[in-house]
Image (cartoon, rainbow, N blue to C red; front, side, top):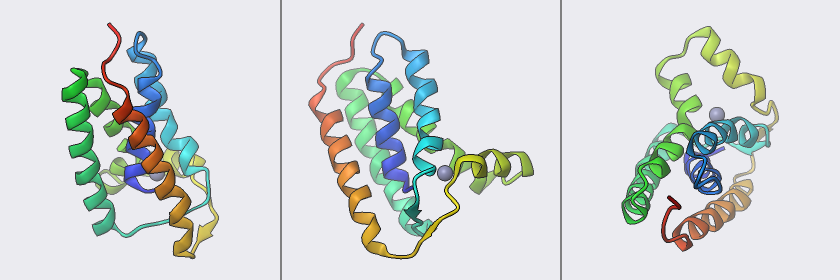
Length: 134
Ligand SMILES: [Zn+2]
């Protein structure tokens, strides 16, 4: 799954638990493994890096607007497993990530369209929520 989808989905999951932030953050991290279980087209690192930067900016903006830094943290947790594989490729890290990752290799770039549509819907959902609950 691409980084933007991971980050936006994790932030959306977190948003569903405004009064139970530890649960929201835990599920945000867990969303990574659920999404990776879906067969998907793998983007190359430069594109993933751009999506990470762009999505981080979106989440920083939304987190500031909602006065909830947890929204950004949730997004980062949503992509943490991929970051660990990239920057700390130890056997345990790789095994945990591989545990849920789909082994089906999608080679048709058109399969990015449903994922992009999901990212747009998730961004719209996040933008439509104005404030975090206390
Ligand atoms: Zn992953």
